[in-house]
Length: 169
Image (cartoon, rainbow, N blue to C red; front, top):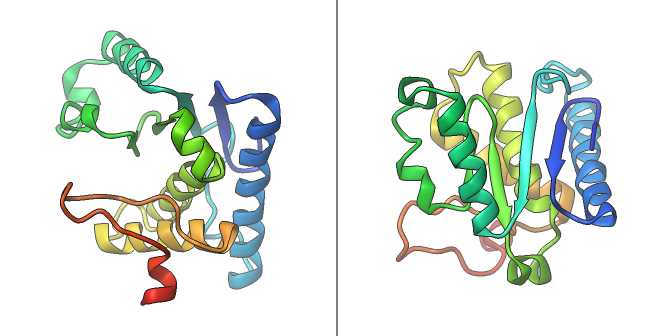
């Protein structure tokens, strides 16, 4: 799927892949309307590629390919700790995976929207946005496209968000 601001490589069926593309375009249009500019959406399809995989074995296979293509120094410090997660906003190729269960409980575009919003802010600020701002902006992107948050960054397995925390805030 190629949008004006990202290329998404995915294993999702065509219908769901189109939903991802539509969600990313909705995010871009909202940000343009909000800021009267495309300054906060600096990515382009030829420079920003996102992998949306299905099931953990695909995630693991993709990560093995990345390890063959890049040296540990190029992959970064967090590369190995991210293997236990289901998404990683890696500076070379951000990637995530969905499962059959998660695809039944949320649109397939939630994770992609979250990561793309986060990347837009990171690039717009020259990679100087603090983590809390990047995460908050990513959650905002998911919220404005889907009407509620269904993708979360979890820092502790004991503190997993429940429900729509934007409404609760």
